[in-house]
Image (cartoon, rainbow, N blue to C red; front, top):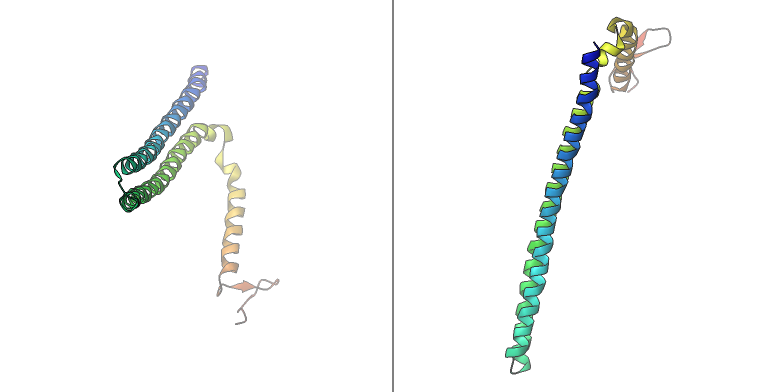
Length: 163
């Protein structure tokens, strides 16, 4: 009995540590993906500045400079729209993955915490009266919430709900 208690005592912290490290690893992977998106934004800005620099160096009149300026900002807007789209997709992906990882972690914590719960509670027949009472309350609540459900008078006789 003492050995089993010691195993349980030492197993749960290691499981918790493992789950926590998996969550941190997941967060780091999402952070790396976000930094890659930010790097694309920096590259977009550098490309736009280089295009404008080339336009200034090569332009011999204002019309050629204006056309090069317009083309560089057009390319900037297109790459910005693609980057915003990818950031929105990443955000949805990150939320879904974080929710899944958190859900898995919580279920593991629940499983680890409730592993010996039945032993701590003792005989389940002690809770049968409470379980029956809760079931009756739930059943009564769902019946009264139904639009055509049976309604009872205080005397216990059923009567039809007025339409």
